[in-house]
Image 1 (cartoon, rainbow, N blue to C red):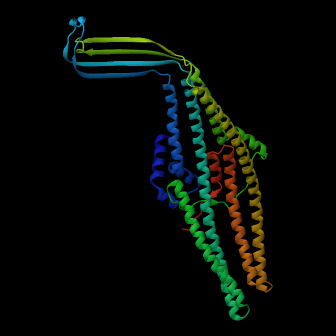
Image 2 (image 1 turned 30 degrees about the vertical axis):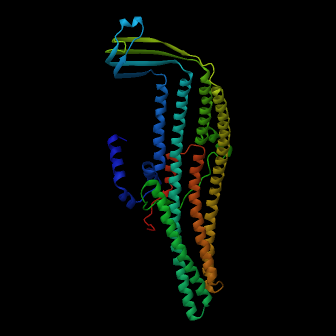
Image 3 (image 1 turned 180 degrees about the vertical axis):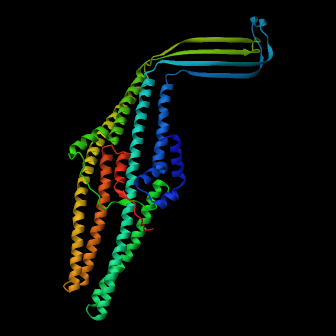
Length: 453
């Protein structure tokens, strides 16, 4: 996209939230808003930006350091000399000023600790980059979960309203039959009880819908309007490849959680090297220039001194009370701790991948089973209604059949949302979740004209 077009698109997106809410939003719209507004991701981005400075700080360890110093003073003295040789000196009060400045520099030549710290800085930056990618993938999951939670709450309201309409018709029919004497008061009371229960369920559903919308607002900064829902002809597909161990192998190569923990182990190993460097000698090039001017002295003589020096400074540590050896042992223990945490992360990665794979394959079967259950429930309701009309079924049977039908619809909708989320969770478990996966899910959504608002 050209820069001008990109700027216009960002401007329209940023300043037209109400227009977008009126037109409706899909999953990618919610995710794009979350990218710009989610405070959790923003915090990780800022942390990553700060961590990038570690590289420059590591390079600075091998660059020269230069300091400028200056001083000025005024002295008042009163001196007496004793002895025969004191006749050549000025005794009594003296008043004089002293001014001086100097420049010192140090250029490290051999400092193993600095080299290791620079390597640690690169490891820390690499770890921060992976944490940022993981946070971006996590945002995709959180956005999708919040999105489908709103859809499920929205569908629950629709189902309650549809069920209320069906029971209202059943209640009216039961009252009419009771008045003509073809039904008992039990049929009326049963229908009325079901209707009253749905009234309470509707309140709960509406409240849950409002809560779910606020969860989206916490990510995007805006209350969602109409949302695209799942297509009725949703096609479920098993994971590819269909071998679970291949997915475990992918996780071992690409899991961000495991890779971040491995970077922690690398840091711990480098820390052993850094602590061991305390036994190494250091070699620096040092230099200075000093210009001191004194208008007098307690002896009565002033001076004007300029001095420049340059040389090498070698420091060989001999004994530091055992502190260096203790720090090395501490670093070794921390390395073992990091190694254990890597193993724990590896096992968790394998478990999460297997669980995500099984959940996805299970949700594929669930969607198919609930689709069949919905067809069967519809057939049962049709048969029950027919039996009620000819007098072989009562109103309670009809109400139960209606309840079973709406339960099957709710379970099917929930299974479809779970299937789509499990597709994303499997990709996240192996560290390969991208916006392309989110776009693929978005293709299975369609925007309707109705809204429970």
